[in-house]
Image 1: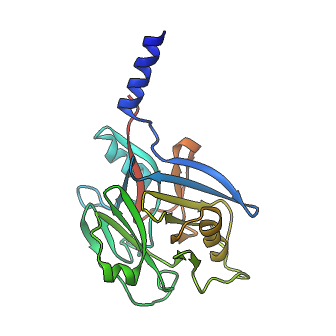
Image 2: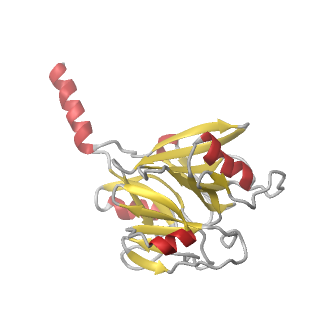
Image 3: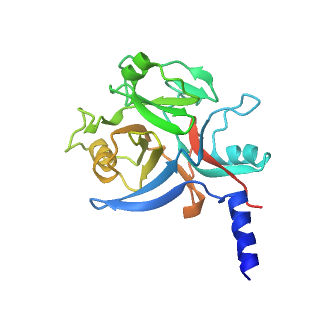
Length: 247
């Protein structure tokens, strides 16, 4: 019996868990949020936009089909930044080191242009949310990057233009990172929330120094360990963890 148990443990260690990200539902000030925590020292986090033929994936299913051909699967995924009608990224986007769109530093219409906005930068063993002008100055070498906006939390403070009494409410999603870059927290609200409420969850509930808004209204999550695969329109940039498929 002990031998069988040891074999089972070895198989699990060799194959790894089917779902790499740790997703859970949390309540804060009466609102439910789903949080997927990614440990960058143990898990592979990747941005997706185009397949090998240059076609935009547009859906979690399309990415899973491509990964399946190599014996892999999505552990979790969500939309990862704003995009145009043709689903091309609005701001900076790097996928596996290849740049799709350049950095946008000017103010503009819509939430993306509500400065300061920021960039999620992926590097080996870490992920960092970096305010755009700081990103431009420091020029970090990212293997993957997606620009979006507005910033939700900047050095531990909420975006200065968030209003406590705002009437703008949507299902929203975004990402926050720890100061050492080892963990990234991907969050989607399970109810309509304001920017102030959403940013406060990252700052006060998750205690994160930096957080970035991805989008609202079209926000979607793929979290198979929670039995969740949100339906909706076709997407542009997508981010997720990559895990081995179950044997």
